[in-house]
Image (cartoon, rainbow over all chains, first blue to last red; front, side, top):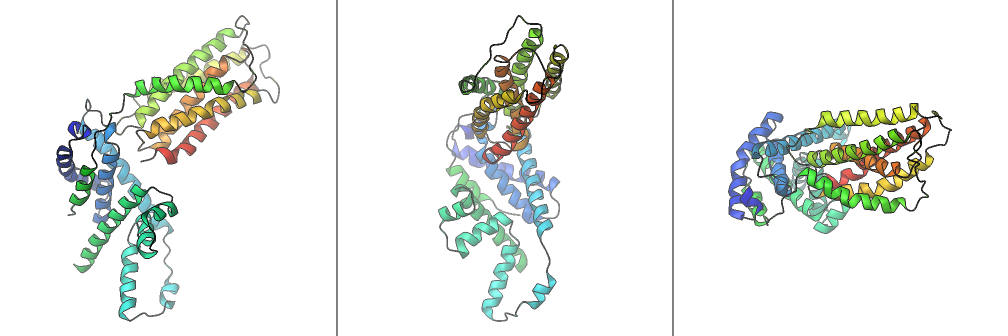
Amino acid sequence: MLRAQDGDQAAYCRLLKAIVPAIRALVRRKIYQDDALVEDVVQDVLLTVHRVRHTYDPDRPFLPWLSAIVAARAIDALRARGRREHWEVSDDEAVLGHPDESGPDGQAQRQVDHLLSRLPARQRQVVELVHLSDMSLADAAAASSTTLAAVKSLLHRAFATLRRNKETDHE
Amino acid sequence: MNNHDALIERLCRDAHPVKRTAPPWRRAAGWMLVALPCGFLASRILPQARPDWSSPGALWAGLWVVASFCLGMLAIGTAFALSIAGQRIRHWRGLAALTAAWLLIGLTGVTNSLDKIGHAGDGIYCYAFLMVVGLPMVAIMVAAIRRTRSLHPVRSLAVAGLGIAATSQMLLGLCHPVAGQLFDLAMHLAATLTLVAFTSLAGRRWVRI
C-alpha cells in the first residue's frame, strides 16, 4: 500500500487483486445468500479504497483499515436494499390488467424491464438516463445530482450486475 | 465467482502518487490556526463588550474559556480521527468528562452569580455571536474533512460541531460579561445544539464517500 500511495501502479494492481478474496470473505460475514449484492459491495469497496487510499497510515496495520471500509460499505448496501424492499409495492391487479405483449419485441422489453428491476435504484436510474433516454454522461450526472466520475462508476457496476444476472438466468 | 479485473485495471491506471493525510492532532492544530482568526474577524461585525476580569465571577468565566478551548481542541481532533477508516474515539471518556466539566463550570458560574436567573431575552446577543463566529468555522471544518471524506459522516460532523461550538464559546468568553445567568447559559447551549445539528446536516453531503 505504501508503494501504491507513492504511485507504483504495478504494486497497486497486485495489492487490489490480492485483497479481493479477503474483501469478499469479509462482506460475506455481513451479507448472506445474495451473491449479486456481495459482488456489488466488493466493487464498491475497491472504489472506496481507491478514493481514500491517501488516508491509510503506513505505521498502522492494513487489515483494520480495510475491514472498516468493508463494514461501512456492506452496511450501506444492506440499508439500501432494506429501503428498496420497504418501498417496493406488489400491485397484482396492475400486473394482471397489463396488456399481453406476446410479440418478440414485447418479450425483449419484458426481459430488459426484468433485468433493470433487479438493479439497485441508483444504478438503474443511470442506465435509464444514459441508455434509454440517450442522455450524455454529463447530462445524466446533472440530472441525477451526482458527479461524472460517479455516473461512470455506476454504469460500470450496473453492466457488471446485468451481465451477472443474465448469466444466472440462463443457468 | 465474479471477476473484478477490468475495474482493478482501470483503478491502477488512475493510481497517481497521493499525499498522505497528516495525523489528526496536527490537522486539528492547523484547523485552529485557520478557524480562530476567521472566527475573530467574523465577530468584528457585532458590537463587543469588554469583560471585567476583576469582578467576582471572573474565575468561573476564565475557567469556562479554558475548558472551551480544551474541549474544542479535543473534539476537533476526534472528529478528524473519526473521519479516517479504522480509527475509533480513543479519548471518548476524556471527551465526555471534559464536556461534563464544561457544563458544570457554566452552571457553577450561574449559581455563584448575583443575578442567577437573568431576564427573558438575555442571551440573544450570545446566540447571534456564536452563529456569526461558528458558521465560517463550519465551512472550514467541512472543507477540511472533505479532504479525507468520512465513512461515518454524521458521527464525524456531530463531534466536529461540538468542537466548533466550544471554540466559538471560547471567543465569546473573551468579549462577554463575566457574570453568569441561566437564560444566558441556556442560549449558549441552544447555540451549541444548533451548530452540532447544522454541521451534521449541512456537511453530510460534502464529506460522505
